[in-house]
Image 1 (cartoon, rainbow, N blue to C red):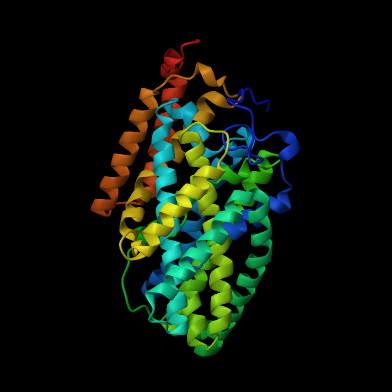
Image 2: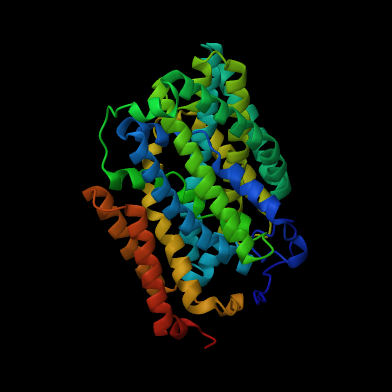
Length: 429
């Protein structure tokens, strides 16, 4: 597909945060798969797996993980395919979906959520390090938070290449350790048959369980185009997303579930602590969260570049990292998680609107930037209705809220796009 988006300013950032990635800057399939797998091999995901491991026997557990991962992988793969076709980030694609000003909603939602998660991860690193070494000094814990934040910020500023190398080094180590602990877990309970005999000690409906699986990365997955726009073809992007979000994320949930079933501990790092492997636990912690939080910083960097219409992500990476670190020092990891989960209800419909609108209107080429309306009211209305439906579903515990939001948004945006309502808003039409 030939991109018809005219750059708004001279590109000064090699990661092209507000303009399409040109053909010469596209990456290989292996490179993209490594980056996305490193993104989803994320130890806090195991906490969600621990909840499932306590509520389901092995057979039902595997079915829930597979179904939830299939839903998540399909959603992210569609967005990733669109990212490769357009060469654009999610927040820049939102300009075509919601309008020049309406897209600021997407930038604030996606960027703000990622800054909050950045602070949660920095705070978690400080807390777990202090726990490992039995530190009582708040100053020592703060020093760890600041030092790790600087490292992650620099990686994100370096861009795609920096995240690739961190992922290439840390992800294999994490997976080797994860499989090793899985084998230790099997020894603990007498093999797969023993694991199958472990009975649940909590209850959870299948719908809630699938929501938990989908919710682990649906917000971050909405920003998959930030990386898949570097793919050479849409097919490569789609397969890389399946590897990362279906296989990688599913494995991490399964590892967390088996840890809870055998050791009563869903956090993989703490399982290593229990096994007396404090050093390996810290290596895993830093290696894994370094890569994942660098991705997070990159995401709020490109969101800031779109929000303020600047050609470089770096100032916004630095500013967001500072804010996230301050939040971590204030203990945000103990207070913000519920808020971020709530935002997860409102973010997936944004991805749904992007999918539906793209399929309805832009498959043959994106329009010139200056032709876009300030506000695309029909699509904004679709987003609002889909988000409200997802919120109501969450409060009423009916269905799978992220799926409801995505499907309603995609179908609604597609219908609006095919009806011609959006073309009437185009001042050049």
